[in-house]
Length: 508
Ligand code: MCA
Ligand code: AMP
Image 1 (tube, helix red, strand yellow):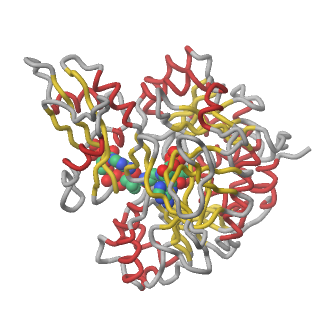
Image 2: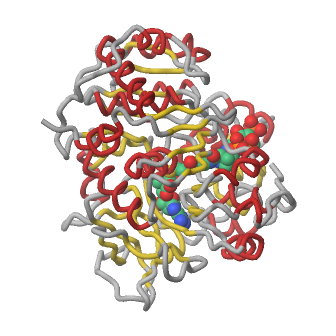
């Protein structure tokens, strides 16, 4: 019996002494060592009551052990459910209630706040800190370093990643072994990754980009990764000369360009810079090429689909375009209202089908009709077109979404909290240009006459409930919100009024 992802990503490296991970201080972990860590961790999961198909919710800092925990979930046939470390305990409580994990793994600092929530949902709670130490590591340390992988089918769930909905709360995108594997193999091939590659990995591992794009691709290629806890521009510049590739969100590239120490020479060993998760401005693309002589390869994806399109490895990488559909992936443009398929050059909603596309949202069969067309194409909510040469361009969003530094914020979630505050009449949350994060979250709030509610108080209350990246970086208290004749709030008008709110370098 087989386990598709484990067999493709990890099993082939058994016994290999080649380096897989390199820490910032130069400490190296071989593939063999990493596989043994995974096996010990898989035994620890079983000891914690994790069964095939059980969810394992993980909110821990990036570390070798955290990555081994992902591998252990695959090997033990469990469902990996990573959570952004910025989520507050209130946000985590929602995910635990919805996903009903058998095990929650948190940072030791969150143990006390999460204990009652884990208990209420019959989940066991274990810890792992930023150094890979904690109760789960202690348990794993005593275990055998071999583990027979639990059989899984290609359609079995490998991971659930929560992604905010346009209406209401976050939904879990259910990703199968087949979804993740097809994407990793396609990307490895089109981006030409081999065992000779060394990826500079500075992305978080709780999202598709850092986990399934970066890590899965490197595992299928058998290459190595310089595994950094976060993106620190100075550290990245000093380590780039020992890497051959880097993947990042546009903020990585604007921060690199903002440093005089980032020169053509320090990028000279890199054969591939990949950007995604948010639009890369053509100006950034051009400035990067002028500085380094290299054209960033921009690609496009979603949590629900993994990667959808990519600019070519060979051939023209076009600024502002996200390239061609991946092999085996079909992209078309649909009329947002009627669903009619539109010809080349026409703008509509981007729809996608292929082995990469998820099967649906966790326990939300009711969303099937609104999120998929009858013939199975997934409706991304991104507005785009396909030009005469077949390049896909994203030109806007049908969904009300802000992407800040590569992280998604759904205005509705923030508005609901602001509107619930005493003294607030109503609010509108929207994105405005930001020099560092691309877009920043901003709120316009109408306060009741005589109320002493103000921007500072709103910020303080929200900070206890929302992850920091979702907090409005500016709040304008206004007399009224602009509305159209139908009474609908005009966010475009607000975006126009406040478009210069964050002028100047790295203004937070
Ligand atoms: C941190 N802050 C942010 C963000 N990150 N605010 C808005 N947007 C953000 N992305 C807050 C911090 O909490 C802090 O608030 C203040 O902003 C300054 O933080 P700073 O130290 O500058 O941030 P950082 O730690 O350097 O992080 C910025 C970052 C990081 C490097 C851009 O956010 C990051 O790694 N982003 C990548 C996310 C990612 O992997 N996305 C892929 C999703 P305070 O001062 O109040 O504490 S997967 C996906 O989208 C699809 C599938 C795809 O296509 O890839
Ligand atoms: P997420 O829900 O975090 O998976 O974010 C997916 C969304 O990120 C997509 O629907 C797009 O709106 C956006 N996105 C990803 N890559 C790109 C890109 N290269 N250019 C523009 N938007 C992108």
